[in-house]
Image (tube, rainbow, N blue to C red):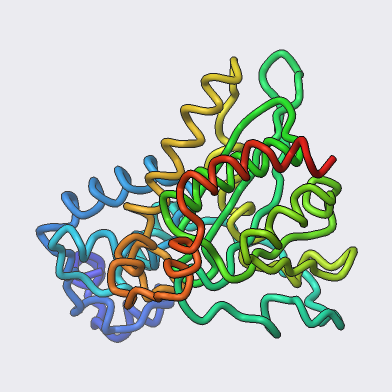
Length: 296
């Protein structure tokens, strides 16, 4: 612009008016920071490692790595570089009538309410894969991701025994009305162990929102991005993702800390441990082995 005004003998005002530009464009200097190339390189590294992470989570991870940067700047850079994650279309929200929903019967402490569900996928040869997911609704921890071709109620009891012996017993366990969850064997066994069942209203997955949200993250971040050649590969990758979810993935509803960090900050709750002590390890093991056979 300065060259044009000197060449044609025009004032800056006239040259800007002719070009359709504001005069401030001739005075404002670029304030690009010297650290922007390094920042972009780190952002691209995080974006490639976690393709479904939005700018807020990337900002938190950068801050955890020692960067002093505003979240608005991260948003601008993500938008400019094409790193923004496409938004999903919002689903219509409804309120069910069941008193067992995650809104009306909300977890208040660790091991208060667990929830479990099934997710389905396929290996490369087209054979189906059944995945059991189990979470603690209060801490958001993933307690188990079990991958198999088939999972029956007897298998479900064995998996719950393993988790309970390691973590303690929940007061409630929430699920939909799948045949494995409503089976007499699993219901009678949970009643014997002192854990109450919470079945959401049929056809109302929004009442089991915590596990449905977890399943959405599992599918979005793992299942949709991997081709499982074998069942063993699916098991390994699922467990690796579960560990990452608990120890590295920042959870927005936990103020952007990991579920493991949040669980470590929670005060221990004695009710579950007292009920677990009431059942000796020998009695628990024998019950777990006998129940599937006795309760058929």
